Length: 338
Image 1 (cartoon, rainbow, N blue to C red):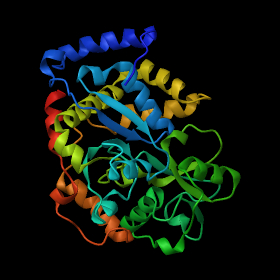
Image 2: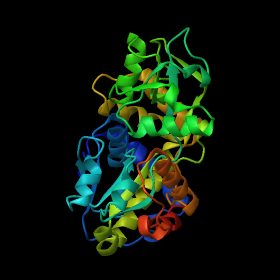
Image 3: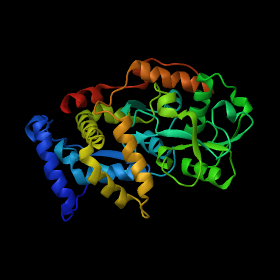
């Protein structure tokens, strides 16, 4: 990545951060030796990813762990996975794409290598005077995005675990979760599944009972990280360094010390800065601690995702953990981030 050394405010924070890294065992002599091979990291160009990219750039974690990284932005929910599957990128560290296991089952040379955000940063909103519980959604129109997309799949899983017949609810594709929220605001839908960034929104919709997915689906991993088999083999040292950098970033992001850097990065990433949504994300990161410095996932984590996909018909059968996941880089990275 390239860095702009004229951003003095960020550099002052990065300098202070460097002292903290040294105190916590992350000083340069103790990190892995520099990765000589470029790692191509692909992500969607959305606001949350742009904020993380800006933070990674400004705080210098790639430099700390000697990562030779190139950030590639590809739009669309399938874009990052498609880029990796065809060899145009090596790894996606933050993805809400829910068909990764399906694509692997179909033969894509890709493995899940860990987690981005582990807790689901979504909730269910309803128009004022409407539904107040999950049971009240029966007979209502709920905006969820594409059929069997992330929002729809998570809603189906939630209803299944609560014993509510999903066929009694009219799910409608209104696009992204922001568009789904707007559909409730405009009256085009009775309720929606949308980002927690709207928790401070004054537009009107209310959170319904049992609607916080990080609480309602505590075993569900929200965002997986995945990489090509080729990169896991030929660029393993670089992959370890990348995962250590993200583990350190996530750990810092959940600390009060990151407040100024987070808001500055979000201002850079969002053309018309929305302080209410930024505060909602900040508060969620602080109170729910949705990330982890250790990005590795367990067989139980992967098994839950497989069961969910089988339940909605996206996956035919469970495969062995080693056939769909490789935690070797994540485990090695966790030892570097103490």
